[in-house]
Every structure is written in C-alpha cells, then in structure tokens.
Image (tube, rainbow over all chains, first blue to last red; front, side, top):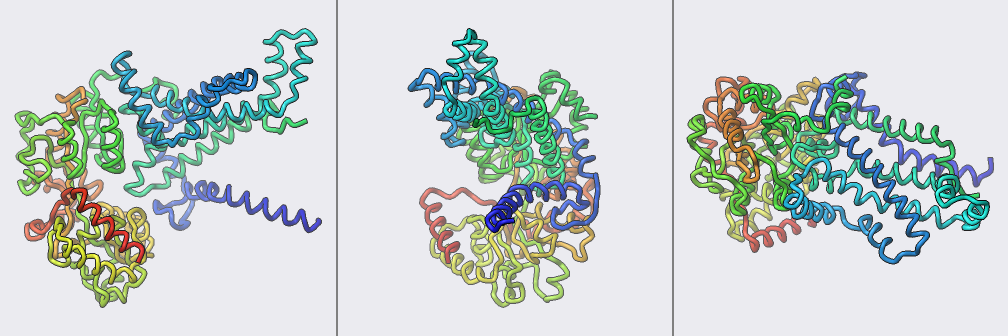
Length: 264
Length: 351
C-alpha cells in the first residue's frame, strides 16, 4: 500500500469512528443492566421490556413516525416540483420562498407558525392545534431541503438528453417519467430521507406547534432530562436507528442506483 | 404487541373518549397508579403533556397555545400567569379537601389568598452528599459552610458541584451570611459574591444537570441541588448496589423552597374535571403516591400516613417546624436588580 492511501485510510477510519462510535455506544448501553449509563454492569433486555410497556413513550414514537412519514412524503413531492420549476423557468421569487425556511432560525419559524395557526386556522376554520399543525410545520421547513438537493442534481445534467427524448417523440409526461425522474431519483431519495430525519428529531418547531396531547419522541425525551435519562431512551433510539437503516436498505433495493452518484 | 396496535389504531386515542382532561405537567410528576384511579373515578381520560422548564411552558402559552385544563407551575411562574390574566379563579366550594393543606404553604406571596393556585408538591434546594466520604473526612453536613468555607473545602477539592443558577447559588450564599434569599441590598450581594469567589477554586463545576449521576457514580462527594434530584441519586445508588449511600440535608441556616401549584388555564375546556382532579390530588393517599415516587416535599397533612416511612423520616422532605420557618421562596427580581445580579454572575464565572 502506498503511503498516500495509508493516510487516506487512517483519515477515513477516524472520520467513520467519529460519526459512528457515539451511536454504537448508545446501542451498547441500551443493553446495560444499570440505569446510570455510566459503566458496563451486565447484559439485559429489561429496557426494551420497559419500553414496550411505556405507553407514553410508545405513543410519542408512533406520533413521531406518523409525522415524519407524512411530512417527508409531502415535502418530497412539493420540493421536487419546486426544484423542477425553479430549474426550468428561472423564476425569481419561488427560490426565495421555497428555500427561506431552511435559513430561518427554528425558534422564529416555530413561534410564527404557532401565531399563524392561532390567528388563521382557529378562528376561520375552527381547527385546534393538533398533529396536523406539526405536520404542516415540518413540511414547511423540509420543502427547502428537498428543493435544494433536486435543483442541484438538475444543474449538473446535460439538457440535450431531455431534448433528445422529445426529439424521439416522447410526450412531456413520458420525458419526465422515463428520463428526468430516473435521473433525479437519487436526489429525490436523498431529499426524502433528509426530510424524514429532520422531522424525526426536530424539537423547537414541534414544541411550539404541537397541540394538546400530541407528544413526539424529542419532546418526550427532552422533558425527561430533568429526572435523569434512563437507558429506555437508548432502547428507543436503537429501534429508531434500525428503522432508518431498514428504510435505506429498502430504498436501495427498490432502486439499486438510488444511492449512487449519477455523474456520467 | 402493543406497539403495533398503537401504530395501527387511530391517530390519537384522545379523539375517541368524550371526557378528556388535559394536564400540562412536569415529566414523571404523577404516579401511574394515581392516574389510573382518577380515570376510574371520573370515567374520563387524563392526557398529559410535559415541559422541563417553567420558562418553556410560559413561552408556549404566551405564544397562544391553548386547550390545557391544568398546569403545575412553580412559584413565580404562577405569578406571571396571574399577571397576564391567563388563569381561571378557583371555585373553592368544589375543593373540600383543601383543608388538608398545611397553612404554612397557603396564602403565598405569589398568590395571596390562593385565588388561583393549590399547592401540589415542593422541592428544597439543599446539599446532597456521599455519606461515607463525609463521615470519613469528618465534615459537617447540616450547614452551607461545607460548600463555602475553605477550611472544609480543602478536604473536598474537586469533589463539589454547585448549581449553575444565579439565583440559587446567590440564595445559598445569602442564607449562609444570615440574609434573606430575597435580600436585594447590593452590599449584601457583594459579600455573597466574595464568599462564592473565595470558594470557587475548590469546586469541580457549576452543574445543573448531571450531578445526580456524578453523585451516584462517586465522582462527586458533595452537591448543591434540589431535594428531588438527591432522592433520585439516593435511589439510583441503592439500586446499583454502590458501596456508599447518598444522603441529603437542609442546612440549618435555611434554604430555598420551590412550591409547585395546580392552576386552571383559561383556555381549558373542562374546568369541571379540573376541579375534580385538584380535589382528588388533595386526598392524602393520592398526594402521598407522588412523594413516594419522586421524593418531593408534601404540603398535604393527610398524606403522612400513606408515605413510605423511610421518606417521611427525612427532614429534607418533611422539614420540622423549626427548619420550615427558615425556608423561603424566591421572588422575582425587577429589571435593574436582574442586571446587577447578571453582572456579578459574570464576574463570578470569569474569575
């Protein structure tokens, strides 16, 4: 092995360790037979048993997943459309509108959404805050991320491919379905997964927009900090990691190239 | 598989029951058994949301969140909710059990005459310690001197943490100097600051979150903190089979008392159920279950017979009248005072 690549390997290894070691420790301690989270005592599955008997935590996990799925799905559709539109029509205001929430401080977005929901939805539509308000709020800040990613992937593409498709008689819809979409699919997937993750772990915006009785995992875990977090939190985090991992594996099965670079 | 069942059924179980009481509470601040019994007696569901900080709860309500029937804020937070007219006055004819509350906890400065609030539980800011270590070092445990006096601290260097809170740490220093925790005389504050600065080199950290764990693990031998946290540390150390015990005591000079109260929010749709809940929690047995769960101080005289004797014996949880007289609740400071205190705090932190 040449000296250069040895350094490269070492750097890569260090980077991966930095990224994954904390996660590994979280997983490891979810099996630790001590509520202190301080040293290894012995193997146990008790925290998982406790978790599956903790209705509050399960309801929060379910809410989090529902919200993340709904929000990432909607944000991906809207964000992809926005990305395509921005690319094709060179609009002036749409980019600003779609991407601003990404740069806006969360606390500002959270408070203004809460005020907006209270001023518009409650008096005019008779809607109280609930899970829907969290989903709407999450869609708002996720759209921007999807838009940026999709637009970025379009920028690097050769226009002549689409022209060729049209030249060979494809309708605009066929061009999109058979040419454009497969090409931007990795970006769309990346945007969707990013939205899912962002929605799943958002605290500030969720805190302000959640209605009574709607708790999510971050809200639940944060409120537990006051009384010392137990390894039950490690257990629920481990399950979430498994779920996310499963989703990525599934996505790459459905579309094998979805996670590979498209650069020709 | 309850998890799957929960995933599959309904968006929110709250939608299915007609009678729902919404409680905005601290996490783990009511026992499951109490909730189950209340739900049975009122034939309704109790849905809780949690906050971990009074300011967090106030911020959310100030921004216009609504639908909470009951909230359990601490001391001054009650006052700011009253001032911003967010609370519904209590109907005391519906609270016959109010007579159980020790008058020492009624008619407080933040809600004179208890028009809006009913005491729920309290914590005392005190000192928790590693009992074996402090006995071994022959140190006193019933006085603030142990966290402020260098002659004691030399034996504890790097093994002490104090709360990372301007008000709490100043209050401890003021109490040790013989002043009120609400003393606003700047000369007294300066003396307190100097006392803190003299002791600071011996402290390991200003710590407001992880001292429970540090005590239980054995890294820290003495911590300034809340009685309920010390109770947690004591339980954890016992459960983990540590070779030492964690104890806690209220310093004889006096300390800060933080009283959590139940209040009705104006936006709550069910004041009827909320009153029922308050009266239910005022029953000795229900109030006792909370103390048995988190080791909180209990303002309810009818609760004593139901409380775990080991907890009832702890003077930090149930202060005897002599100690009780020296406990004080923190009042809000005005803007100028806050600025002065912040400046002193910065001096303390940077030096």
